[in-house]
Length: 331
Image (cartoon, rainbow, N blue to C red; front, side, top):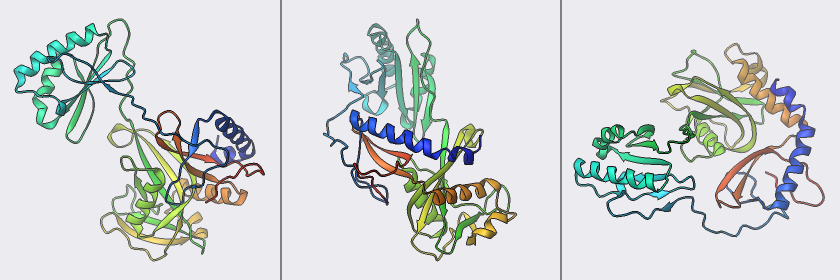
């Protein structure tokens, strides 16, 4: 089913979202929070205040001195951080690992996670010989794991397997769309939306604003979510999600990134829709956004706080229509 067909169901979607929102309000599950960058920043009337309390998913495990110190999670797993251990040499490590495994098995622990840093690389073959396998790695540290239960299969989640990217859809008051041509593109001279990968702990909108600024010199603010593309077999064998976000330009003079961008320009929409070097998917992104604007759809972003975890997160949704009983924040 095409995206356009799905969008034609906006009335029923809006109704469903409105019902969901009222249920959420009555349950007190989430609440809005003040955020920057042009997101919704007004608290919705009737949504409960948040009373901050600490929520700790991990707690230090009581262990004998000859057992590795670790933290226990709610699944009875134990995480051992190599930087928190006082180990003199490999012999001491082997002895302490042997005693620790015996203790964890007796204690009915399930998964043992071992975080090993570059300076402790000689621990890796010892852990591997003891049955540990590799789960994930990043610069300077590898995490190995061992599933202890013999009477149940491992149900451990895979490590992050999907890359996340954003494209900034910027249209100015002259009905021109901001496009770039990459220096290292797969196909030469293709015009596309500026964008790139989301950085760790970076929100989608912040990422789009940053990428547009870095690649084109255009400063922007959030306007609307548009759509996303999901594919498989990308870099490092990962899947890929590409999120299109509409932004408002704050300036018009472009400054291309010399390292990444060959050309940048404001392209008239009429030219964009028929240009042979613009891919059909990119045309669909713009047509979808213009359709939202025509029908008055507000595909927006709000900042919420989880009522249990007390963690802020972003909610992307089609905003329900404003009624007379509650105040719906506007951009």
